[in-house]
Image (cartoon, rainbow, N blue to C red):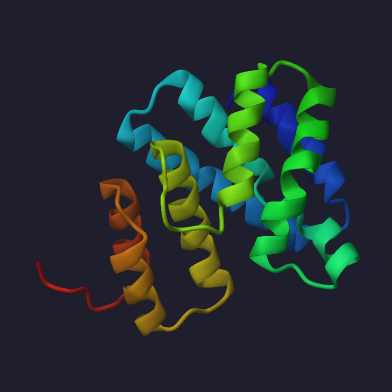
Length: 170
């Protein structure tokens, strides 16, 4: 891990201070995203964007709960980008293009159609790997997510190895 992402993790941990569950969540999503991205062989800039988005992907939860009384994914997508933009700008070290892509990923990480890049695909898969466990999804729900969302070989391999579900035969 580089110093930029270590500082971002520290800043996000401070942002989520006292909320160990959410801190644990983004750390796990980050680790799965890095694992999938590394195995997919994505480039350095895309990996940096992916790592940052994975760390910040749920930054809109607290504001959503405060404004709407809910942590619904659509509220997170609405409230998260501006919070992320403020945090990234305060830390420095990100180009405007990187910040825009990170914010775009945060604004779409609960939208599973029209996935427009490998960074987006990997973020969604990493988040699902964690959410399946944390939300105790049924085997049927896991099968559905596998069929409709997962596309990368490393993501599929992680999913299949973590969760014992019957898969559709090709």
